[in-house]
Amino acid sequence: MRILFGTILIAFVALAVGAADLPTRDVPYVTEGDAYRIERCKLDLRIPSETGFPTVVWFHGGGLTVGGRHFLDIDRRIGIVAVDYRLMSATNGVQGADCIEDAAAAVAWTLNNIAAYGGDANKVFVSGMSAGGYLTMMVGMAPAYLAKHGFKPTDLAGIVPVSGQATKHFAVRQFAGDNDPQYLPKIDELAPLRWVGADLPPILDVCGQPPYEWKCRSEENRLLVASCVALGHKNARFVECQFCDHGRVFHAALPYLEFFVLGRMP
Image (tube, rainbow, N blue to C red; front, side, top):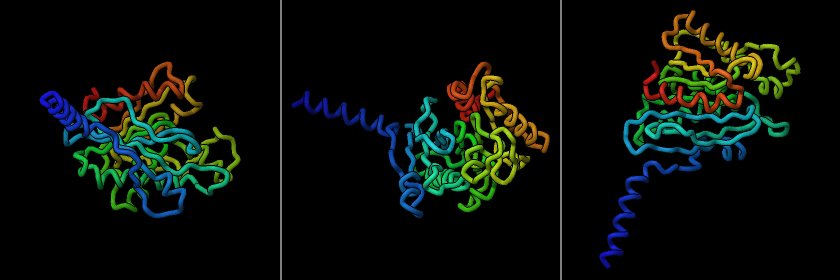
C-alpha cells in the first residue's frame, strides 16, 4: 500500500510540475465565418511553468498555399502560440487579405487571452517564416488589421519576420490575377514596404544571404529596415545570416528570435 501510495504521489507531483509545459491543442480563435475558416482558424499553445512569461505568436511558412502550425525549439521560458490560417487555393476563393485577417485575429486572441494562461500581455511578439514572415510584417505594420480588434501595432512587444516578402507577396498577386513576373516588385496596401515608418513596434528582420537566399528577399528586407530607420524608428535592425539559403535561415534565425524576446540582444 505504501509503495502504491508513493508511486501515485510521485506521479501527481510530476504531473503538477510539468502540466504547465504541456501543449494545449486546437483552440479556436475565430468563431464566425464559413466552415473552412472555422476549420483552419485554430492554434496550439505551449506555456512555460513560470508566470509573466513573454509569448511568440508564430506563423508557419508555405507560400500562403500549404503548411501547418508547429512549435519552435527555443527557450522554454518563452510561450509559443502556433497558428493555422486559411490557405489560398484555386477553388476556395481565399485571397491574401483573408490570410492577413486570420493572422490579425490570432494575434488579437493572444493579446486578449494570454494573461489567463499566466503570460504577460505586454510581452507578445509576432514572428513567422517566409509566408509567415510576410503575415508578421503585415499584422505588425499595417494598422487596419489589428484595429478591427481594438489594437494597434505598437501594442506588440516586437515583430521578427524571417525571410518574409517585403513587397507584395507573389502568391497574393497570383491569386488576384496578376500575371506579371514574380520578381517585378509591387508596393501597394498589401506590401509591408507600404507601411514603413517610425510608429511601429521594435523590429528584428532576419534573412539569409544572397545569392543563396530567395532572389531579392534579403535586399527588400534590408530596404524595409533602412526605410524605417530613416523615418525615425529607434529599434529596427536587420540580420543577414551568412551562407543561409531560404530553408536554412529558419534554424539560423531562432537564436536571434530567442535573444530578442528575452531582451538579450547586444
